[in-house]
Image (cartoon, helix red, strand yellow):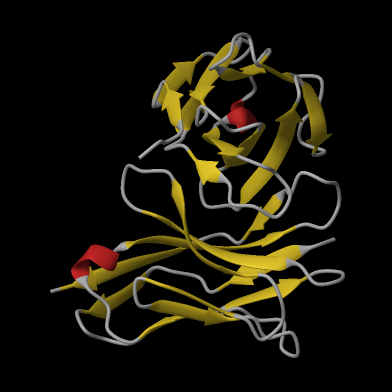
Length: 114
Length: 114
């Protein structure tokens, strides 16, 4: 069964460093998403991506963040100059047709900023 | 704005016990409602969904009914198993935008003891 994969499973970085979180969505999907969950808090929407551009983004997704689909398979989230409060679990998701259809989630990347 | 509130965990039950995890929502219009489950070390998986009032979603013995009058979508299972131990997330599909951004509750951790 096709699945969304994410690497790495755990990333530790120093404050101020840049990190890139990687996702491989399901191969025929067209809509891609990033969510995050700070420990003990809600899963929060960050950004959605379609047709090689951002469709929507939340207030959390400021200039520190960027997304890219550098090739036909990967979908990346870059966080520039990480802050302590960026420590969270980051989930990637993809959907075949967007809208009200099911989003398939990856296992997440736990980011720890020291 | 739209939001989801679900009961705090953790919930610990014995095998074959009855499960209820409460979920209420605040939203404009008529959102779609979802329950996602996260097994240890895995991503979020869609458990069930309901797209309009009075719909009942069901899967793997779990059920939830979309109650517009009480703005609720409580998850129930008549007889839980050890394999049901996981974190359960209630979510709604925000109506803003076209790509469908999920709004999640905090999650409820369920532990089922043999």
